[in-house]
Length: 461
Image (tube, rainbow, N blue to C red):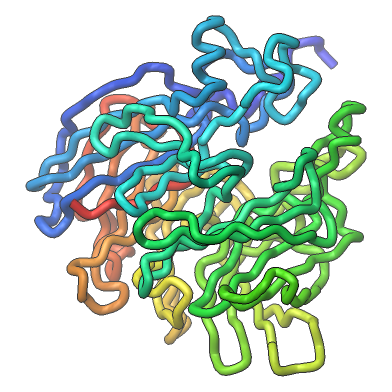
């Protein structure tokens, strides 16, 4: 030990925050297709002050980056999500909350709202909403990105990963640790209709408290993965990991008809594994099939004793739930061996049988969250196509835009934000969705970097 301070990897390099809020017209290389007209919003953690305690990437203040595309031109704007936490700390001129460690918080904010709204951003029923896992959706102006405040109709926490039904326009969602106490076993299931009215919120008890980052929705069913990345208030209060990997608890997935009572949840099980993000799920007769990015061990979080496991990479796996069988065991079959994350698809097929998917991949560094490539997989043929970026360049989540509203599945473009390490700045890039290997057909150059973040979505103009 040399006594030098430990550098937090999530506060350095392109994980480090940018604290300027900017407006730029971007230089275009190539030609932005005329059919791309609208806005791409991407959310991510960006602490406005040096964090207190041991900073975890998931706990930084939300910052939304907007790319506005019109007539072949692209403008950029970024703004903080001005949550009550952000406002309190901005007034104080320093960090006050402790992130995942409640003991690190300033006593002045005991019992106050520490929401960060930093994980995803969705457009539904005329509202642009920044989302995270422990609070209500937070509304922003879709043009200026001005903060408008929490959407109170939700009356409690909502997932960062709702699903929008392409047939009905409903937004289907859930929340974990939804009880009165932190790290409870309580899970909420909710539905917001196409007009933005919350029409359902019901609670049920899961087998144990788990970090449930995402869930699965098909045409008729909702599925709730309770995987052994567990939450514990008792651990947190004695300085042990609030979230920790407990593989002995196994993996459980609750399955219920979307319009049924939560009392009807049927629990399926399998060995310990972890999934942050599914690609899609659908029904075939009495079976539900789900394509997921599965980890053998949850990344980014420790074991119960605080030790970190070896680096764990996710790969595409198909889960099958046979509702007509006597067994409640989940069948798991590998689809592809390329390590990756952030799986996306043509969301006009959400909850339905589908063919095409895309994801950020690690062709050379499995388990590293600094991705080096983008991949397209054709589930019908099994063929995978990969575009490898120049050394040091790091792509984010690939988002699909259909060429037209009625275009065939997968006919359109992939957009993503790419960090250009050699220049320490970022690009907004466009690919032909079916021609990924040919490389970007256009790029809009941001004059500074866009820090690594989580999720984004496209709003058609």
